[in-house]
Length: 287
Image (cartoon, rainbow, N blue to C red; front, top):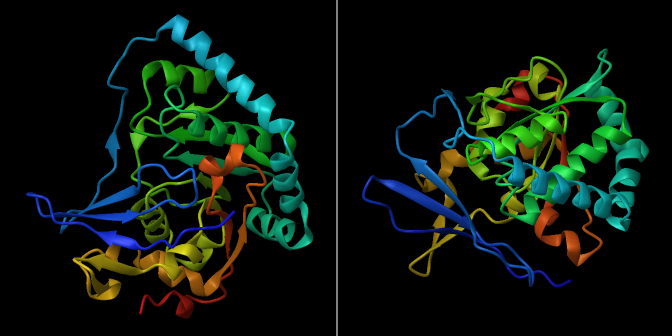
């Protein structure tokens, strides 16, 4: 499948002084561009969270559970899932998982930015893959999930599936105090950057396995189009949203996910496994 050229586009600032970065999706399944909003000088803080709707609808709950079960069955019987399992078990990748595990028996899984699993199939496919990986590998432990768009009904379905829905919006800033698999397909760049910034140390990064947007792709497309002028990323006020992503490329082993079928392109294109291999603090220089 031919891939179209992708650039990070810099749109006009809003009235509040925010900039929006747009990374177009590729291929014939192109959807709305992913957007990142950066508020100048504003540090994102972790905040308590509850769904905006507090009532659980039993009928919607039942329908959603059936939809997710159908998605899980679809993926489980697919060549795509077999390819993912095979990739996770090749020696180079499996050795990384073992290294991240260290002396622990399981990797905790944290899912950020899953989106509305009731409204869209793509989030259901992504969630289904995570659930199936846990079912397949005994070394994947408890699953925690967060997205501010989740409804009370969606949250209950996630709990019914054995996941825990976080009551705190961590803004992606979870410090990996134990071995953790962060499952973040198609999240915004600033969420990955927040995660890296919160763990910017040898011990913490070495405790992380990350499934998400390809950092290599971010590195390849760090120029902006602004009124047909090329703008250097590092001279832009948006630079801080990807600073840690670009710096981490020096010490990451990345393994691309092959979507195999168009059925899974929208949910998993440009996704990769990322493993950090650090020996000393000197490698963490941002410049």
